[in-house]
Each structure stands twice: as C-alpha cells, then as structure tokens.
Length: 137
Ligand SMILES: [Zn+2]
Ligand SMILES: [Zn+2]
Image (cartoon, rainbow, N blue to C red; front, side, top):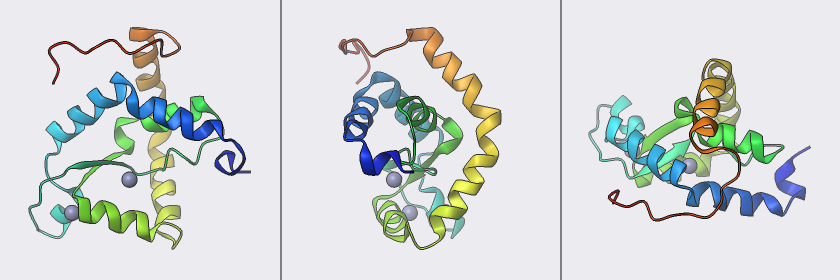
C-alpha cells in the first residue's frame, strides 16, 4: 500500500520538492510567521525554530501529486527547533504519527485545493529547471 516502499522514484520526487523554489519560499514564509519552535512554545519555552516539519509526512503519499499536496500545504507545516524535530521523527511509529495524520486530514480539504491551484497557476505544471532566485537570499 505504501508508495514509499516500492517506488524508488519517490526519493527523487521528494528531492525535487525540497530543491524547488516553491518549497524554499514557503519554508521561509513559515519561519517568518512562526520563528519560534511551536512545540517548545506549548511548554512555555522560547526556542528559535530552524526546521520546518511536515505534520503529515509527505513520504506517506501514493503519487507525486499527493506528495506535492502535503508538501505545499501551509497548515501541514510546523516550525520546530532541531531537538523537537529530532524527537518527533524518533516518536514516529509509536502512535504520535497516527494522531498527526488524523489532525492533518481534518485540515486537508479546506486548504489543499486553494494552495495547490495557487502554486500551479503561478508556475504551471512541471518543474523545468531552477533559475536563480535573484534577490532572494
Ligand atoms: Zn522545540
Ligand atoms: Zn520533519
């Protein structure tokens, strides 16, 4: 059932997403909006976030379209410090993940369509080759 297990293309598609300008810009946007680790914040601790985590893992997709949908869904993103990010990935498979997926699913319908159409409308399908984002650091 898992596309991840059988499809070697998946790693490449994931790399393409992480190398894309869309992802870099979305990531910057998220870190600007939430510069502090969201998990630490819930505990009353102020920690700078350096990681943008996907609440619903983008690897749990059955197609590249689905992967892109999860990758670029703003509500699926979480700003985390390195420690919390490592902890979350360690906890995956111990029940935390199922809960996160449930939560993400509830948000999915509301967000996915608008975001996807915005991204595809501004750029069209396919990645083409990456031009240098002049001016954006
Ligand atoms: Zn943290
Ligand atoms: Zn992560």
